[in-house]
Length: 161
Image 1 (cartoon, rainbow, N blue to C red):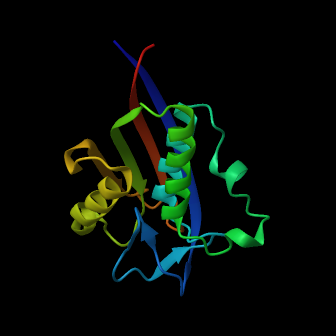
Image 2 (cartoon, rainbow, N blue to C red):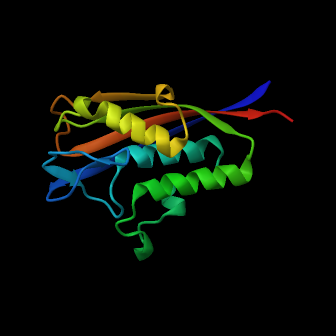
């Protein structure tokens, strides 16, 4: 019997011209606007990191990487995910991530052509087979064209006892 842990995370950033758009550790080619953020603004990785942490009641990325700390300015969000994984490994060394599912809402550019690249990059960061990374891309239907939003759910398995 395994102990199952589910985590959920969500993140959003306003968009502005002249900034790269990074999602899932991938700089999206041809994006005219990128996230306004203290770090690199990767909303997908921020949501994933929060989901990882929440499954183990380890707080959130704002607690571990406060935007008031100049040391985190421009931080590559892959480092945030790596730190979340380290914290979990310290708490539950035998736990294994089983699945991640994420939804990204962005009006432009269309993300479908980048799905396989983002999924493969995310799978590599999480040490998962790519078929354990579910990605859904949505638009806001014009309701929120000036932002990017991501939500993620993770499933962990840990041996009981």
